[in-house]
Length: 195
Image 1 (cartoon, rainbow, N blue to C red):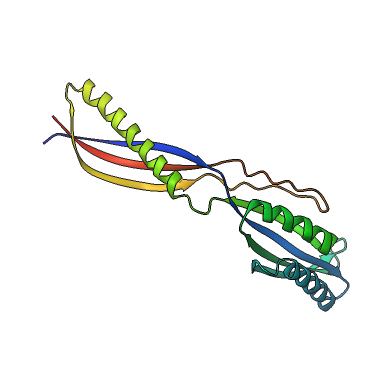
Image 2: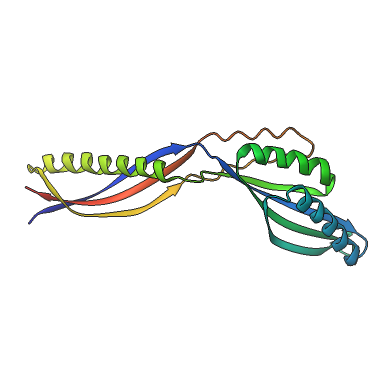
C-alpha cells in the first residue's frame, strides 16, 4: 500500500484573561541584616496588598554593592514574588496598589498575560492544522497521479501558545494593561493512503 505523510500547521487566537505579576521587594542598606530587614518589610507590604491572591516566593538574594571594586559599601536584598490574578483588570489594580503601598522599594519584573482555558482555541488550531495537512496531501497526491484514501495515522506535535506578553511598568503610573490576543498553534502529522 502506498502512503503519503504530511505535516499541517494551524493557528487560532484567544484573548488573555488571567495574569501573573512578577515583582521584587528590594532594599539597600549599610549592613546585610538591615538590607534583609528592609526587603522583608517591603515584601510584607506586597503580601498585605495581595492578601486574597496566590503569592509565591521565586527567589531571595542578597549581594554586596561594591564601591569601585573595593570592600562592600552596602548590601542589597531582593525578594522576588509571583502573584496570580484572576483577570487582567485585577492585575492593573494590583500594580497600582503596589506602586502606592511599596513605592520605590518595588521593582516590577514583568506581567505574563495568559488564557486560563485555551481548549476552544487549541481545538480551532487543530482543525486548521488538519485542513492544512489535507490540502498539502491533496496537492501532492494530484502531482503523483493519485487520490487520497483514508487516514492511516495521525499524530500531534503539540499545541503551543505564543510568547507571553510583558510590559515594563513605571512606579506610580496608570499601568493600563491591554490583553490583546495570544496565538495558539497546533502541528499535526497525517499519513494518508494513496489510491
